Image (cartoon, rainbow, N blue to C red):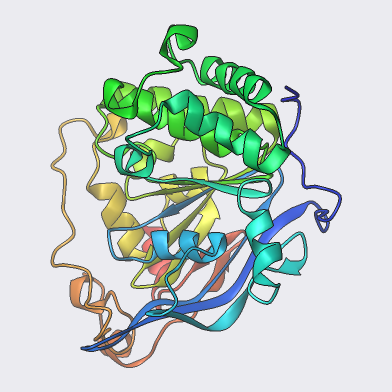
Length: 341
């Protein structure tokens, strides 16, 4: 199997090195209680070989953004009233469904956060990986199983030859996540989305999974989107960070500047709530309150009920995402003051 580089197929070629462009994306869910505005004008890009981390608490819109990119939202109740998602310059939202299906797996793939519920419990893991090759590559059972074995070895499943016929429940959580990664990379996608790939794993296994994803990304030059609520998980692997809150991007920057000097109170709150070696002996501070109900997002800045800097303008005017320093974008009326702290 050729693992030198994951590249788009002949039908798709990057535009100036850019694989993915999400522009002014809006997603809403129509419920009996009203319209929940899950995504409210999100825009970002992903280049070949780049790792973008999308961060935020539960309910911030991270996973919905990923599902919109993959085209796996249940519609209805979901609706995409505005925006574009371009893969190699072609809008996924307007292309025919048959063509869209052909991008899932071979072009854009996803690792889901709950491996046990994502894997089929009644089929051996090797069969499930091999199915990717049988369905998409037309391989016979023998060749597909051989490729599945190679992938299991590549994602470091111990004794892969003996375990290829084992079932998902016979693996640990970390090993199941490696099986999910093997399935996601089977067809050499150009874009890989990892949605909370280390959820419910202990710290040591988290580090192993993140190192594996980083190695695969460098090896294949995939564009990698890491979705997480934990800034500590992506510190060593991401190139850029996009922070989401209540369905909006509130900060974008390269990884090192954002860790050193966040430009939004919410990002600062996330950083203050995780242990750091350079802050030994200091008390961790949790962000007060809870994320807003998406059926009733506050006027002005959605973060204003929880923000230590909130003033009248924050309750009245929605701040735009603006460049507050070279390569630093923040949706805060007082971003410069946050940067100077």
